[in-house]
Image 1 (cartoon, rainbow, N blue to C red):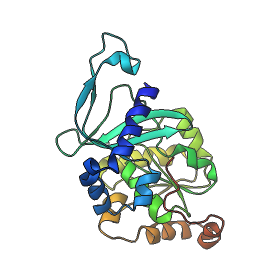
Image 2: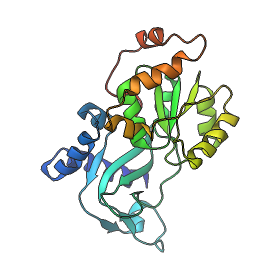
Image 3: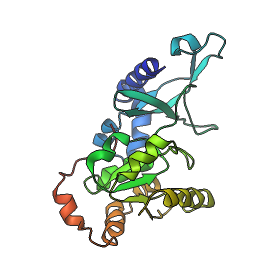
Length: 239
């Protein structure tokens, strides 16, 4: 499964920068993402819906065919492992889906050991938005849903961060999930976005100031000193 998902993701990544990916690329740019962020996230474009034999994905022969939906491909990698391939569809429900066989994971997990404070968000685009604007100040990870990444390995990883800012949406689902993380991560704090971070970026909000303010509120954290130890790049948080 990991091998086939990696092949699909790599083909989609190349397609995004070809003429057939122009509309998808324009969509991402229109949401405020710089080309460097799009490349760092290794986003791609799957040009058409298709179905493949389950055995090609390492699944049992009696498994239904694997649906690969058309849309923007978002690969989830941790180390050398492909955990998930999520696709943002241009229309229809569900808005996000991917090939059967994906595993629950933590998007951007490889960057947590950098030792910076962590901003925990729900969606991959939220993570990319914060990383683009404040990637020298924080590491940003996404759970994919309000109930994602609750497995022990991801909880242990986040527990090693000096600070976790839980930035789920301010709706009931977001507040309930935030309370769960705040309960299990000592010292974690709530950071409520205006909608969600990706929407804030698209609207032209100052995401860097939003993050900086939350960090400055933590006693003893010198935001400028933190930034001086890490050169600012387009996107740190995603491998």
